Image: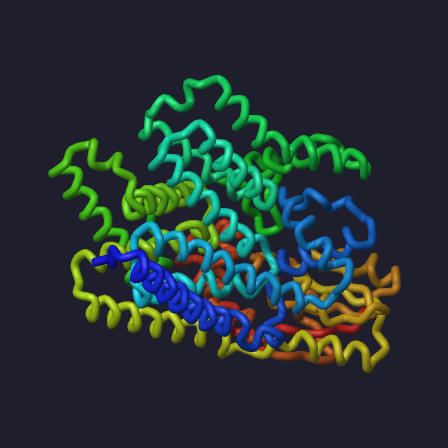
Length: 506
């Protein structure tokens, strides 16, 4: 029971804050541990880094890459003063921890969690394998979590205390999210469902519509004008949405469809790679809400508690994302709500000591998986490839599909990415001296290098990071493969013990 005395309340809040900060420090350590040795096997991380460098040098041609101008501009001031890839990784890792803290502190306050419960929630969500993986790359995921936490905080406040000035704050967080990542589009149907369920008449006020639509349109107008000033078509950002939803041609892996219903993919992933508490908490929370509904009627479900609110989000995210092409990052917004459901429902049926024990066991299991999937394959061998090239005076290099080598090349070296071995003849005439047959091609499902693979390499290195199941699953959105097919592709790729093979172009 919460203390009612103001002095005790202050002490309780301070204690909870210290527990939260302690847990965040532990999560930060897990995100930063051996980060400099991790490299960046995924293409998008390095491409994002390259774009920030281009912006810093005045080249805005890729401002709307991936429909994420806000992300690129956010890191622009940093790119002006620093170039090292690991610096951007580090900042992004700390940003992901900040997003976790922003979310956990809100839940702790709204649900009146104790200090240990707050720490348990923070550690359970913060040691999620996917959130740890995405918290060590350089993509939009970390900034997404900060903005998503802000969106949920503002929207729950709007539902609990309907006021005309509440919706513009929701629109502001949503507008910021849309400017950083197009994946915030997936939050709009859920917000509409919640608003329909609320049905409090707030939307009947014309002024509300005008303010909300004006806020949502502002980034598209302002950043669209910026793009036009630097020579880009005014519709470039919106055209990206169309291209993602309705691609005209298949991608390099042969995947073209965006709809791909499979309601088992995420359940199988969560059951195999994340804590079993996430699915258990979802089921238990659903049972608790159903029981409340049966006893109190529909009116009971309009009393928006954190448990009910996040149950709606987690359920609709899990259902909606199962309809489109899938990868674990498709549930990026669901992992923390699922962790909350596990804690909030668990405290309803377990004594405090039992809940603490269950959470500690779950966090321990998460750390075991992090060690196996993320730490054990370290260090990356791309620096050794770059060192070999420098020793042999190579200034022009090609790489198959991957940009993993790029952060380790010096300013005199240039890297070209090839997606078909037939491109090598033209690159050789342009002065490219070596080609790296990168095992990332297996991860991305691009198999167009059979002739090159049959030749004798001048050097070769292992790269266990390219054999991890999570990396393959994270690219199943690109390849279009199902869960079992993706893991089978990973198993087949492990037959290549030296996935980094360097060939001289003659």
